[in-house]
Image (cartoon, rainbow, N blue to C red):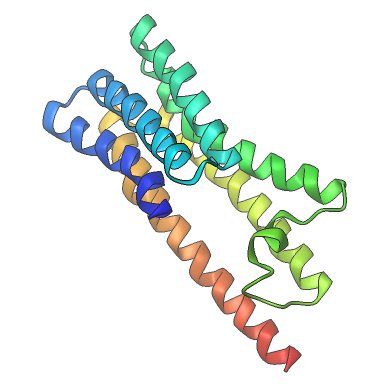
Length: 177
């Protein structure tokens, strides 16, 4: 259910854009959908993940600036800032001696410390890459290309990275046994 609530604002942004061909209407829908998703998470579980709060803040601030100033560049920065916030959080945790990926996955997977560190660093690099790639697509290609990339390219790359991560995890789990 959490994946759906995280993905729903993106899907609604995309659907609105494709029905209206208007990034400003799509942005307004994304703001409302994100607020509803966070509100639902809070009322359902009495808890909202930090990244959901960050995403809500970014969509309200950057989406609001997009609508207020009628400038699509603000909303185009949102995925980059979210990716960089996630990568930055993992990096700060690494420096503080806390592995964010291990904290998320330790109940499901047992790995040696070195493997956890490499996995955490791989996620940091992936988020840095995705943020940079988003900027390149947003400011080097058409608005339509960016919207398609936001949904299909971003999700496709995330899926490919998770598959690669799964192969890495499997290799280490087999070596451990």
